[in-house]
Image 1 (cartoon, helix red, strand yellow):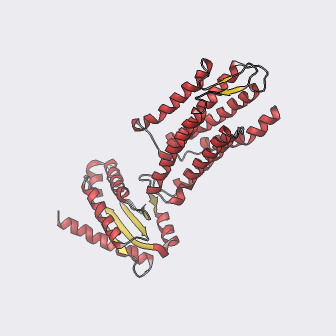
Image 2 (cartoon, helix red, strand yellow):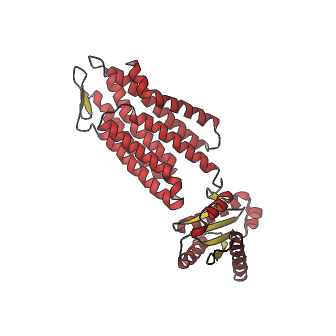
Image 3 (cartoon, helix red, strand yellow):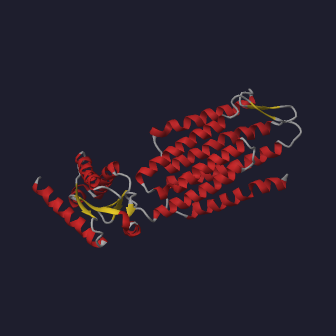
Length: 353
């Protein structure tokens, strides 16, 4: 029995314990993100303990209330772990996402109803498990959260590169396969070890993002701008230079918090209309660049107009310059052309005020 439990849970426990060390020694993440990672880790460790106890009680000749309790806790925890991953992936918070917790409550009530009725599951006098009409509700709940997780992943595709969401897809399919193997093939400990591995990879994914993105706006930084331009130069269609107007005025008259608000507002305006294969980078204080790959000129011109229109609905404004890569010229010259066009746009805006 002890040997079986070690074989089933050793990998999960080792990964989760090392993961705890990472959480407590890495302070790069915001407190909310660290708390969610810690919660997911603790829940997985609890699931290992609960499943181990349930595995032992299942070997007894007679039914004990301890087995019913461990089963109820195990069925309750499994969907919660996926729910926490959704919060990490989608950055969901606030009352808008409160409804997502409703299936968790219902699932927990059904799981613990085994103490009173046999709708979910029951046991014979010789300790054999019998699944009731609601016995798959925990797996259905987990499947529901899998769908929500997929939706969060699709939303990520619209704002970041597809290559950066691979880890999200890995997390999704890891849980899907694990749930199927435990519910249908009766494998032991699969959700535990797959959850531990997926959580660790997602942690590493977020950790690498810390060094690629601007901390204020969460858009890609200057270093990524030049790396992406070099890596995909053969497909570069245009460079757009974006500069916030009157940032000094906002900072001087209302404080730097207002200046930060202005910068983030312009970013939101850009991201709201950003087409696929176009990426936004913060290269300076109020200076942003857009790289557009495999795009027609009409789409790029439309993008410029849409950004202007979105910004006009806010107290802030920005100047935009465009340089088309028709002749595959030197990238630095292309950026200079975009900057020149942007400054001409800025002067024109001042004359029309």
